[in-house]
Image (cartoon, helix red, strand yellow):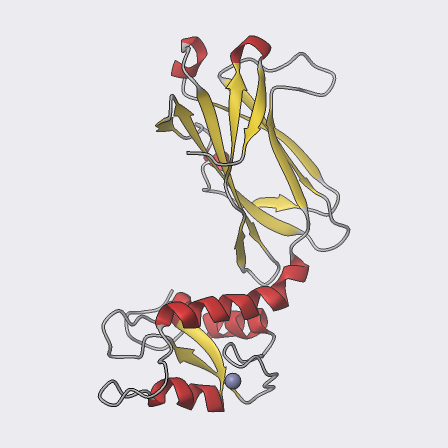
Length: 228
Ligand SMILES: [Zn+2]
């Protein structure tokens, strides 16, 4: 976080350089020390901030290229902020994806060597399937009854408020409580799970949300790939 319309913080600049491995986020070339952290929306323009989301590492050539555009005499196609951000994300992804292990997670009533959980108690298992590099994760769960959002689990751990430590080959078998209204209800109970993995360079990798639908007669869940 930085102050509005100012310079990026040293900490954010370092993150940007790590995330792109000192490659230009427009032309993709390796820059070494010939790299600058530019503003996507120029300082002084509406919408400009010193937040990391407005930062893009560029080689000197590309930096002068994006600044040169003159709205009075448009020539070629100007780089729009949305395009610059998308290209930057591609480069960041290329140089950080090796830091993200395969992760498996599921909503389940099953418990190892124990009877199944019963509502409003819902189980959540998450497993780091890789061999190297620990990561952190945010687990964000939302509960729906008949398509209507009814709340988050009581435990903040499942409301995206705390970072989970995931070590290699490590599994966590957790659980949370849904609002009590789900116990006697007859409507369709659905749980939406959103996971954000945070790598060793503190970059966030958001996985696509998935849903689980409760089968009341069986006290189990099936996977719903397009949740509410
Ligand atoms: Zn470049």
